[in-house]
Each structure stands twice: as C-alpha cells, then as structure tokens.
Length: 411
Ligand code: 7TS
Image 1: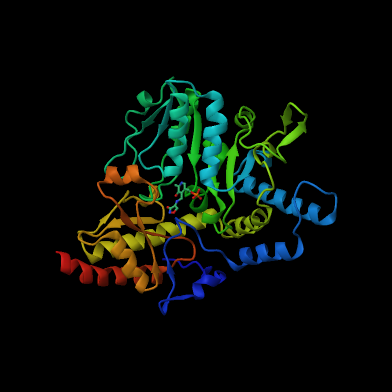
Image 2: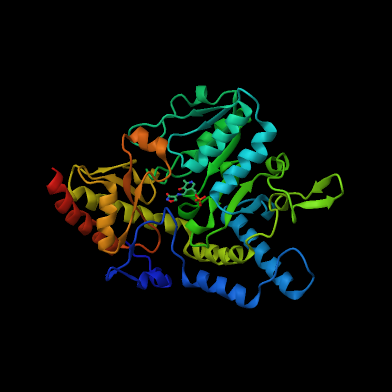
C-alpha cells in the first residue's frame, strides 16, 4: 500500500492515549485537522477579525474577501457553475433541514411521495418525516440488498409521477456503500422530482462534480473534510434555489424591510440570515486548498488501498467476524463496520481505547439500517488520508487480543 506522507501535518497524531500512540479511526464522525487549518483559524482571529458584508473599512473588507473566497473554492471543489450556488450552513443536518423546510413547505402536497433509502443517516430521514407529518406526504424506501447495495430493480415503479423528492446518501457512513447516484438522479429528473444528495461522506472522500451528476441539491459538512466544526454547505441549482423561500429571517438575507413587509436577497445570501460563521469558513478555505493539493482522486485511491488491506487483515483474524457492506471496493469507501460474534460493540470500542485506538460503536445515527441488518449496534473503524498500514495493524492486533479476552469468555 502506498503511504500518504501527510500524517506529520496533523499535530494531534503526536498524542498518546493511555500511553499508546493515537490511532484515530473515527473520521466518518469527524476528521482531524492539519496544522495549516488550525493556524489559519488562529491567524484569522489574530489579524483579520471583523464582521462580513458590512463596513467599508479594511478589516471588514478582508474578512468578507476571505469568506467569499472560500465560497468560490467550495464551488470549484464540487465543480459547481458559480459561487452563487453555494450556501453556508452549520452542517449537513442543517443543509438538509433547510431543503425540507424551504423547498418542502413550498412545493409538497398531501399524498406526494418522498423517496429515500434504508441506509440514510437520521439527518436524511427525520427532516422528511417532519415534513410528511405537516404536509400529509409519504416516505417510501428503495430496498436494500443483503450485500449492502440498493436494489434498483423496481426503481421505475418506485419513482413515479407521485414522487416529488428523491434524497439519498452518496456514501453510507455504516456500510461504506457508494451509491449509483447519477443513475438515480437521472430517473428523478425524468419525473421532475427534486434530487437531493447527502454528501456528508461523499464530499470528503470522493471527487464530486455536481454539474455532471445533474443533482438539484448536494449537502455536506466542513468538519468531516479537514475543516473546522460549525460550517456546512448546501449546493443548489440556480432555478431550484430561486424557487425556495428563505429558511431563517433576519439580517443579511433581506433586501428591504418596511413596517409591514420585507423583500429578500437572491441566493446564497437569502439563506444566510444573521452573522455567519465567517472565521471557520475562512479556515475551511485552507482545508479545501489542502485537499485540492493532494487531489481527490489520490484521496480515493488511498482509501481503496487502506480499506482493502484492513478487510483482508480482519478476515484473517476470525472467519466469524461479519463485515457489513459491499466487498467490491469500486463501490465502497473507507468505512468498516463489523460484528464480532459474542463481543458487544461497546466492549470492542472500550478495549481498543486502552490501546490508543479510537473507533465508534453504536447505531451511527442510522437506526432503520441497524434494524435492517438485524443488529442494535456495530463497531466501526473509518479511515482518512492520515491513516496508514500501521494504524490498521494496531487495530487488527487489538481486535485479536479483544476477541481472545472477551470472545473466549462468552463462547
Ligand atoms: N449524513 C451522513 C451520511 C453522515 O455520515 C453524517 C454524520 C451526517 C449526515 C450528519 O452530519 P453533521 O455534520 O450534520 O452531523 N455522520 C456521523 C457518523 O457517522 N458518526 O458521527 C457522525
């Protein structure tokens, strides 16, 4: 496996956990940050801090420039036509809620159908449920095959004239499945349903081209792609954004306010009420530069290599360990959720922590998927650019040890 030489760029990798070197395997939850991003944030507060889009003074102009430059970088990163199409939110969850609220309440009627999948994160389920409860619309699911891929055999029946929204994840945070979103979006577009992609795992790990995908809306979070917390993105096509009402009202989003009425600005500012998280947005621009410098094709290639290595090593430990999700790495990202029979996922995670290994255990905010898989929780390792073969070896050694410790007692 080819090493990525970026590990030294991440100061946290120096940390010891219980006197062991840190092995960070929870990047699907949030990524670590390179020193350039951490420094950019501190530098912004030290040297440039002022509110954006107001004031004709130097600091405010600099701050506005930093904020808008990141918007431009984000647009280029996902190959959007213009920075006009990029809205800053707090996270993927807020981006998806914005769509459900602003588009949904404008366009959804009783009996309309919203099509999602059983592998969605709660943030791509619950906003649609809230919308359905209010508007009398119905949620439907594309079925999931046992191999962790979507069963598209009945897609033509599932996507009908009644379908008004098709919303799915680019990549599952549990199964690692990379969905054939282009094909599904094309079918949604055919019946003029709104196509929405939850890109929380897609944007950090895969090259994304929203124009080629022809997707209406694409949502993601900065914190999972080396950027700071508190910054989300919603990409939208011009005509879709202009057909949406504002989400929140207040400063920034208005054009004119009278005693009894107001007018609003065009997108993206229409959706950015109040003082935005401009310092974190400025630092997010540095995270994007960093990823662009590596190249998203290289990020993807590294993840295929490391996931392949990890899957091979885990299978060697014990044939009874079940790895969820597709075997085929062409349609799988760097996520490895697994079940170690006889060992509770929380015990796996706790025991790994003693060895300095940070993995997640739980339902991963995907309870419908857990039910479909027939488990209440799983342990999950997830990889990113700073992980190497040594991380996988430590993880595998710890898993072996734990299997002996817990497994022998319970089997
Ligand atoms: N969608 C997917 C596919 C995700 O993986 C997550 C977060 C979200 C949406 C929500 O992102 P947020 O930034 O708005 O919170 N996933 C995880 C995870 O797998 N473990 O912790 C958070």
